[in-house]
Image 1 (spheres, rainbow over the protein chains, first blue to last red):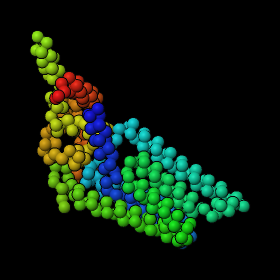
Image 2: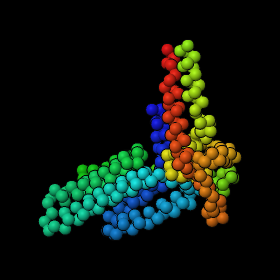
Image 3: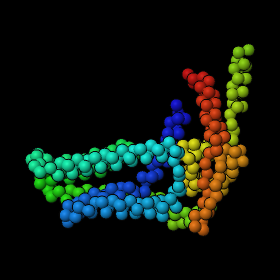
Image 4: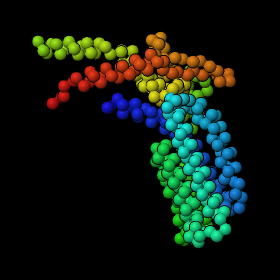
Length: 201
Length: 111
């Protein structure tokens, strides 16, 4: 029905405001960049540290920059439960993949195919996770990010471009796109100093 | 005559329509609040594109009818107003949509 479509459109509009500021793009971009830097510097702890730091930075930006500009909305309990369930599924998949990689590399004699194709498999898994986010959040540009991440693995396997280069390039591009969205968002929505007052430039 | 009976039914059907919700700005406010649990005034203002005065007036009417609940609080020193639909408001919105669908379905095709 037309009216139902209208309500769905409104719901989607509400939901999309969470991605309009490009903050999640920047989060993903810097996380991928962190992977590249961790390979480059052989600091395996780096992605974890980056992930935790970015998580708090994202909420800080949301609180200080996003909500004063476009306001705050609390989703219905059903939607919140759905979001939580998807987040738990995503986290479980990530942990299982990490565990699988750990087990495969923990065993003494690793199969040669695993050693040969590990970067491709790893980038593929990361790309699949980003695809999942794109599908779940219905934000199409995240499919492009997934393709960029996967491309890093392909370029490493065949033309032999350094593995970290793919991560750093993809991370840089994703962060730049996110910054572009953030700048557009800040221009489009000036901060409202106080309720009842017009937006201040 | 059948024609006049049909006209009478239509009149009855349209007279049941909740005119408070029927106003476009108020319908939009109700629709936004229907799909979420609560939203602050800044969010409603940005999404619906009303002025502060208009938004306040329309929400005030919905609040007076018992459709919307308003919570005023302070974030630091700044006032912060959050609106949400009451159960009565949610029910009224669903009834309005159902009645509008019935009215629109009864309309003859243009051809």
